[in-house]
Image (cartoon, rainbow, N blue to C red; front, side, top):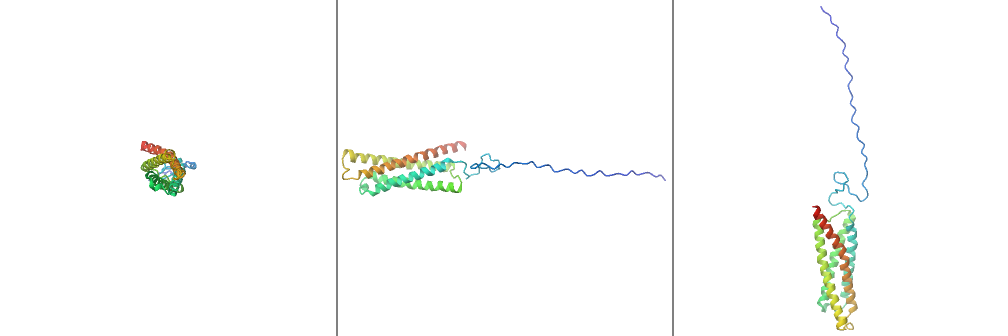
Length: 202
């Protein structure tokens, strides 16, 4: 019988593979007013509805309030007279000032709500609607102010009828209408520029 010696086989110790070290990612908080994108890269691709340093919302709110204030002043001064209903141009000024005041107040409320909730609702379609609304109301208030100025000049210079007509009130109402139109111009330019910019981006 043959006897063979069996070598002792020692199993090799298990190799322990250490888990890969996790890369330390430094989380840098976004700057105040900077929106973080949906993928978290902070490249400015903010989700819809988030405000990203939009100066026109705050500036637009100020101009809208000025428009509404001047239009309301023109409306109040003109209505306070007794003879405005007998002149078609003055009635037209009352109607235009009323439309301008209501439009400015509605847009001002929307801007104030957007600032409070920190959301940006001015999509391309909304900006186009705002620009068209500003153009229509601006045309109304400007034409009404020009017509009222012509009638007031006719009464005061040509007819000399200011002794029996409140020409001072007519002049004040016309001046407030012109100021309302001037306060509307920056908002119209800003909305038009924003609309063109968004259409080009889309």
